[in-house]
Image (cartoon, rainbow, N blue to C red; front, top):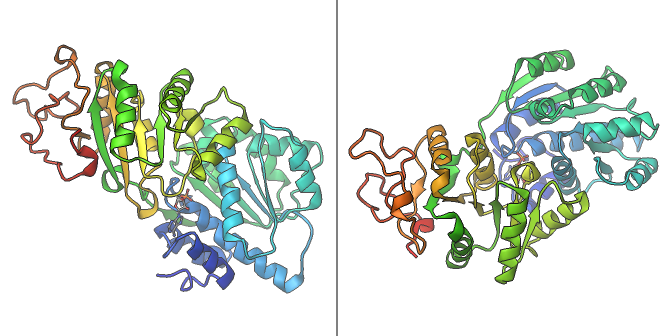
Length: 420
Ligand code: AMP
C-alpha cells in the first residue's frame, strides 16, 4: 500500500516521502480513507504508531481542497488538543512538514510562556490551531480565540488529558465548537470516563485499534548492565565511546540527577543537556531543538520532562537509573525503535535497583538481556544471586556478570552486548 493508493494528493505525498515515509503505517492505512470520507474516528493507539500523520494528513488534504474550491476563508478550521506542550509542538511540526507545499497556516498554543507571540499569530489568522487546553481556554476567555468556524476537532491522548486533570477544561471548550464538525478522538487506554466522553463527542465513529509499533520485545534490543551507583558515570562514558553512540536519550530518576549526569558528560567532552521540570519552557525547548538537530549529542531527561519527546530515528535510550514504575520502562524505551526502525535500550542497574528490574522483567515477554562482562563488575557481596536451579530463577535475578553463555539465554549476537 502506498500513500498514492490512499488518494493522498501529490503535494502531501511528496512531503511524506521527504520525511522518509515509504508506506502508510497500519493506523494510517485504516483511518485515512474513512477520514477523507468525513467520518468521525475513535482511535485506540499510542504514540509511535504514526497516529499524528493519520489525522494531520487527511485534515490538511480536506482543508486544502476546500481552499482550492472556495478560496481562503477566515477563522480556525481545525483544532487539535494535546495534553502537553511538547506533544503540541510536535503535532504542529508535523502539520508544518506534511503541509509544506500547501498555503494553509497553523500555530501552536501552550502555557508556561508569554502569550504575546501566540496572540499575534491568532490575530494574523490561522487555519489550524494545535493547543494545550489550559492556555487555549485562557485565550478564549480573553477573546483571542473563536471556535465557531471549526470543521475538524481532534482530541489527542485523551486518557492522559484525564490523568493530568484537563478534562474540565476540555468540557468547557467543547460547547464552543460548532455541532456540525468532524471529530477525531485518540486514547491509548479506554477507562470508563474516556468511553463516555467519546460517546458524547463522536457520531457513528469508525473504531480503529492498533498495537504500538514499538512493541519493545521486537523493535528494541534491550540490555541491562549491572553496575554500582558510583560507577555509573564511568560506565555511561565508556558505553557512549565504545558503542560509538552519536545520539542518545538518557533517563534519570531525579532532576538533580539529570543535571549531574549532563554536567559530568560535558566535563568529559560529550555535549549534553538536561531537561526537567525546574527548567524554563524556553530552556527545555532549546535543549530539545539542539538534540533534534544533533548539535547536542546526549539529552538527559526525567520521565515527566520527557513526555511527548519524539525524535526521528533515535537509536539509543539509556536508563541511567531504572524507573520505579515498570510501565515507565516501556514508555522510555518506546522512544527508540519507532515506525519500524530498530533501536537499542541500555539499562544500568545498581544493586539497590534489583527489585525494580524484577518488576520490569515481569512485565516483558522475556527478561532483558544481561551484558556479559564490562569494566565495572558489581561487587558479588551486593548481588542477589538467582536461586540455584530454581524454575524461572533467571527472571529478574541478578546473574553473575561472568556467566554468559550457559543460561539458555544465548544472546551473543547483539552488538550492544559486545565485551568491553
Ligand atoms: P506518532 O505515533 O504520530 O507519534 O509517530 C511516531 C513516529 O513515526 C514519528 O517519528 C513519525 O515521524 C513516524 N512516522 C509516522 N508515520 C510514518 C510512516 N508512514 N512511515 C515512517 N515513519 C512514520
